[in-house]
Image (cartoon, rainbow, N blue to C red):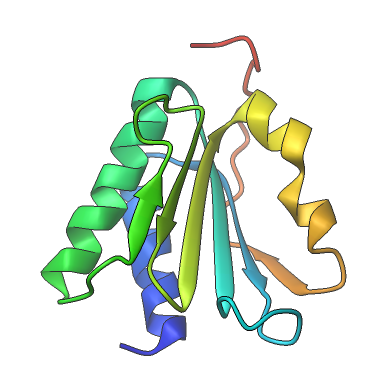
Length: 124
């Protein structure tokens, strides 16, 4: 599966269960580790886990085997390594603190989904 198709699949899986503020960062010119990063926010630890589980389920249905995952036990920040695509799902406060978008500033970024809802960082 091409990395662009994998990005679309991951975004669709995240949108299925209402991920917030989905952003894609093209890092092909910045690193050899991966081609794209998909970053999304969840509203609670349970939501973060559900989002990553849904992405995992959808990519496995298409025959993609993840290389690894991290953070599923706490649900504050979960990472799913799909090789050419790395999916980060975080609670809002964690995402604001680590600010991966700023870290990868200069790489092409695009928003897949805009939510009009304001999230409360204290929300669990």
